[in-house]
Length: 277
Image 1 (cartoon, rainbow, N blue to C red):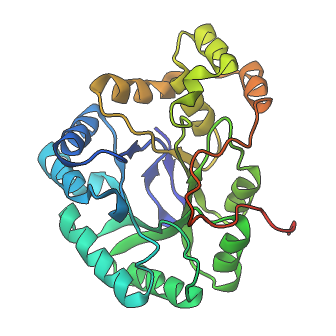
Image 2: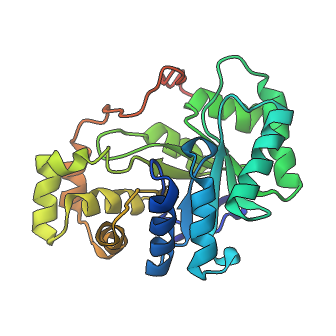
């Protein structure tokens, strides 16, 4: 498993996503994933499962220092005081005194962006977050945070899969040494219905999900956090790392539509990319 090291990260490129699992199901799934060899867990304040993730990690027998742990702060907790309180709650639920990566989950509509970023950076300086980043930021907003506010952003998490292209964001992230984590990497399981992906899977004796994951994980600086509750699916996702896609496979995927966004709530930002720069 490749380890992404942008801005001091130590983040395995294949992670374990936990949304929308909660409670005992989530705790058991986290423990099982760690037993199988996952070392990258992804959760969020809004998922309401940080306590279960913390319990699963604690009961797994895997040392805290051997696991990369990401959580996120919700968009209505972005004032400095609210963010500090959110971090305190997250750490308590996760049973740890630090997270490896702390992300702003979504940009807010009306916010004091410089104060928010200042508060995020302070959490890094205090050691509560080893690294910091953002999620669901379009490129113009990411550029403002990185170039104007000079924030040490280590990771950008966005929806990314075989039918939603993120080439401009990925180019920008690479230019600024920022990792890109793909959420919904299986397009809410719709990859299983795509004939071209089915054909590639059949050719390699793999599943469509494994093809879609390996396509992402083969890209420089990209990680993915698929959710899987069952042991079989968790192992299948790990086994995607063994798959070897060829140029013909990549060309077929390149010709798929790249505008199929699955996640765009009413509070989402303007996804337009803005002028070239």
